Image (cartoon, rainbow, N blue to C red; front, top):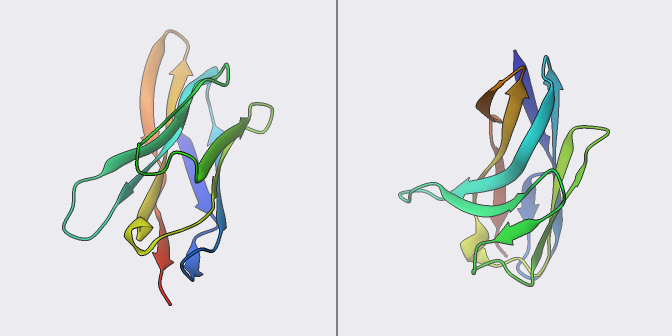
Length: 119
């Protein structure tokens, strides 16, 4: 079984910064894409950012220029540096990983971490 453990959420004032981390552990051959999604109250879960095993990235338009995704393949960890945070960034943030086990691929999700942007 593979587990994704997130950390780094919390309460921050508008304009502030937070850094989320997500570490994958368990039985796996490798990890393809890793990323972050978020879900605000009453809204659907949406993609925030994704990074491939080779380091290619993709961002939601709403976070471009403010958020940066990165990963440490040796530690099976993905990070999300969030700067210039806005109240509309408030949501539960979920880590995601596409894991390879032998020849099959599986999607795994973290438990979610709350990010609240408020004065």
